[in-house]
Length: 99
Image 1 (tube, rainbow, N blue to C red):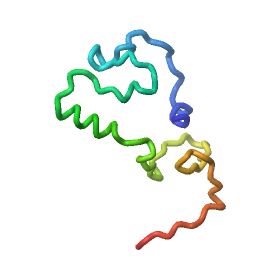
Image 2 (spheres, rainbow, N blue to C red):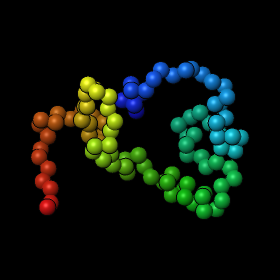
Image 3 (cartoon, one colour):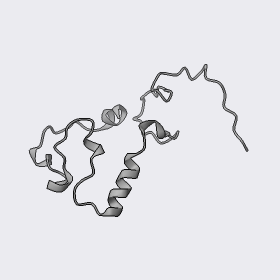
Image 4 (tube, rainbow, N blue to C red):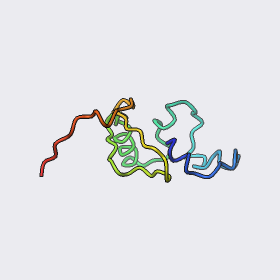
């Protein structure tokens, strides 16, 4: 997230017209960390089920695949483990691959 922000142009600042960008039914007033855990009103039964399935995943259930990060030229990449702790890549054990 920080890397993408470093590559992006400067933000134009606060724009009140963006406050309800999802419309009245697609915008929540919840500003806590629970904002994205709430389904939007008006979803069909199937859409609500899809939302609930996606919402059931824990952040630790996701795997970041190598080679999908966009870096600006000259930016350094710091390897981290699944707990976001720095990893010394030179000291990391080699991983065997099946052919």
